[in-house]
Length: 107
Image (tube, rainbow, N blue to C red; front, side):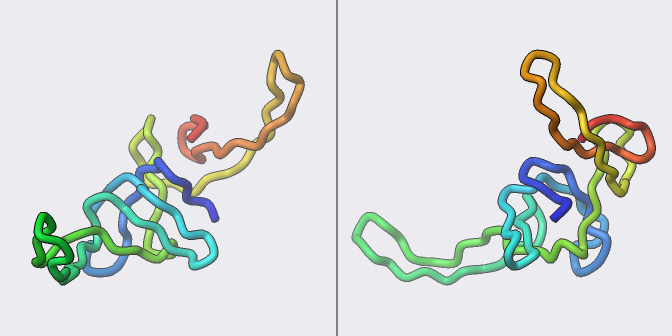
């Protein structure tokens, strides 16, 4: 899955087309993510204790990954990502990072 928690994404299809938001939670086995401010659902809750009230709660629902595209934080364009292996200076370990195809910045 190319989208990770904390990424800024743009919705490219569906009812919330054109909205941007930050990824709050990722479900890789279902190919779905929760995006801040996108795809609100209403959940009806019952009063369980005297202190807890019942009512209708609005919260974010999941969005399919195919309906999202990553937005680069530096050039603020929507982009596909490429991967590059970078070696650490002190550790000597190589790590794989995502790179913006437009500006070359690490995402």
